[in-house]
Length: 277
Length: 194
Image 1 (cartoon, chains in turn brown, purple):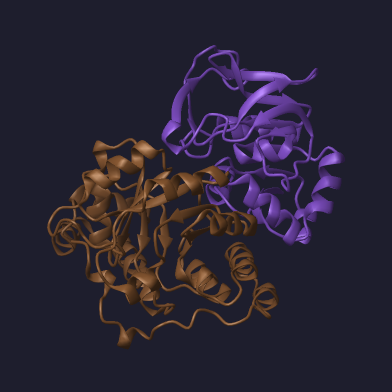
Image 2 (image 1 turned 45 degrees about the horizontal axis):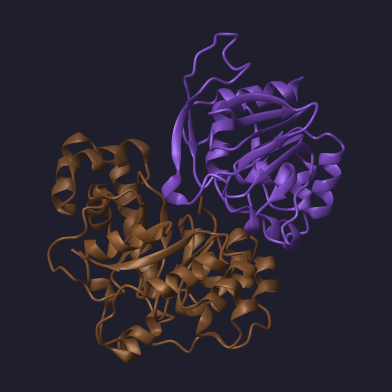
């Protein structure tokens, strides 16, 4: 049960320990954090199983790992390794330009990214059991995370106001299955948990995502690309829990050292958010 | 007034279920909020994360005192771990409140992929009708390995206790808030009223 928590990107067992010690609800095991994938370029793939084993060995909390979009064999391998969740992730280089993984074919649950409600519902119709707004991973710039979260939650609100004929139009516009659109009209929320990811770097960023309506946050490069990861990780955990308490946010934001330098969205060459269809 | 410990995990859904039962319920994150409630639900989530946040939010002392003074408490999944007397496979720095004499093994049912659902017969929730119609969702659930004297076992799966009660403390190793069935919550509310 990952709600109201922080899921942290880690690249080795030592970082996984720091993340769990700080109070993470899960770790995401990957070979390089998104900021490094951005700098290094080249093809980004599923992590080495040995590295995932090493992280599983030191963690008592759930371990997630990323597979490339459409790369169902990487997902099969991750399931065989016993990871707790597979993230079919745009941060890795896509393996299929048309098809996402048929997630119903797996026992392991999947989390998938989305920039808008249509994308979220297409992933859910393929079997995703958790959605994260994509943001723009590895930038330390929260602007895309806010844009995607507002877009998804804003459309959910609008669908709540729509009458039945308008729901057909919504399904058409969103390129999403009508029954899911009708379900949203009835419940006023996604049928799966909705988390936020991509560019969060500070306790204030985490609390912003929570106040906007995210149910948990993913923090990737923001922790281990900062000057002093352990206290920042702990502060982000506390900010996620106490996201409405400005006094406490002020207290935990103090003296954390420099956050990741980050890249302004205008200077980004490769937009991970455009991957996924 | 009911409280739901809202540091991490499934707290929002518990509040909804309690509201559905027609009672006032608030999210509890601070000692002041804890002061204002008569009983507490501790939800599922990561027990290690919650244990840290109990400390950083300054709740450890107040919660210990209230629980020792017999405040009714309902712990589900991670909440069961936090109320248990003995925790196996926990983190060294993870502290539980020891208000129900059971030993639980954290993640005792395995990883996420080992999550399962089961239809339970729970003593006392059906006015005496013995029907296994309570759908229980187990997610990386703790397993009960020892039950002390004076602890009632209200439901079991394959011989392993999954719902236990001691005085006004109720625990379940599964997530009763995820299915649209409020009978276990109502059983807890009976204790609070009683």
